[in-house]
Length: 234
Length: 288
Ligand SMILES: Nc1ncnc2c1ncn2[C@@H]1O[C@H](COP(=O)(O)OP(=O)(O)O)[C@@H](O)[C@H]1O
Ligand SMILES: [Mg+2]
Image 1 (cartoon, rainbow over the protein chains, first blue to last red):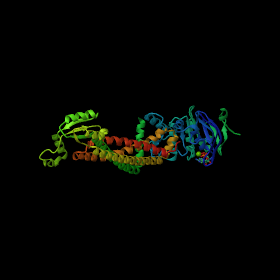
Image 2: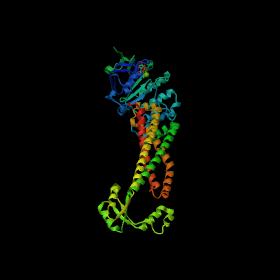
Image 3: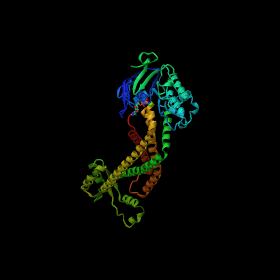
Image 4: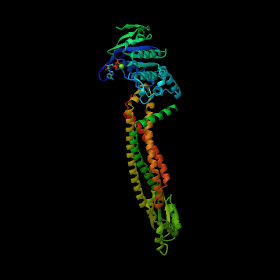
């Protein structure tokens, strides 16, 4: 469970990225976070991953206060998360498969197991034929799928994807979003940010956080009382 | 086991990525390591030789008459820890002969053996000074000759050599340490984004650091190996030559010195590899 309580994030530059965020993400939820560019979506995900610490309020991941975590303790929490970064953060000089394998190297699994799971994840995103291609030779859309494969191969409790449809055309964007949405299981929460609000209308029932200027302007009902649907807050 | 393979792969990757930089660093490290190999071998030779000379601390006692046994007995009783032996004039002649070697004709210039019999007193080094003075006062003793002057000279020479070696050791230690930590720091800067990504994916610190440590230890050890194998043969040959040429100075055996030097250099290069890498890593990475 990810709990965010009264969180505020002001960057050292003075930019107020988030203000008064209250949000609880339970296991198995599918959450879309929408908002225009600059509304604070990435910042919110950074709080969840402990990349930024809230300047006010608290962020808990499975009970751990992210502000208290450093080094290996922080790493341990991050291993529960399958992140897909907006800028992907794939390793150049390595193949698609190696990149996926890389995300699982430190789980104490046998290499054969890691290989098998990585290949499966690449197959799941439809990229098994590109497994041995250096990452630099793939198109951006393909790289996005490698990044997703790296995130899901870890079988994380939380898949956190930041603008995974970024530079894709509409058809491909919908494909990627559906793929991610399907990863939602009772154990795995899927959290996706996008500024393309029109694309998510077609998705399966989901929870919705709408951001503007760093504040939550709308929150779907489930966050309040467990029912689906959307209401406007305040 | 899978991880060992992974780490070696990563180390290889890091080494390959900065070929020129690594080669230049390796060369300067190798030069320093060669200097250190020479220094250590030198220090060991001096140290071994000095302790061999010191172990031979002795006083030669010349008498006015033939009471060798009496005086010998007396010396052994008066000074705990001494050991006496009577050296006959003939033995003294043979010793001198072998020391002078081919200068044999020097002794044959004499019609008779010019050397006298004497009592050789072996004793612990710390007793040497005062004992000689006391023996000289025993009745029947004409005069004594000790090797204190030689020992003093050997001692100050040893001290100077050791000091010089330590100075060089410190210099080479500092030099290799700086080169290596700089190299690791550079390597980390180059792979900053790799490291960031690993941290974001939740890699434990050790997992992130080990490839860089591997790179550092490998380069340090390799430079030592090259330096050592390049210089070991020459030093061994030189020492063995000196052993046969300089009879009066106890040069230790070449391969014995080089074995000790090898152990030292291996330890040194590992130490530098480890500390240099850790320092390089620490100074390049701000704590998360
Ligand atoms: N590292 C940073 N330092 C300073 N300001 C930042 C930083 N990252 C984001 N911001 C600012 O915080 C606000 C929210 O940014 P972000 O979370 O990236 O929004 P989004 O992902 O919705 O586009 C913006 O005004 C942005 O300029
Ligand atoms: Mg963003």
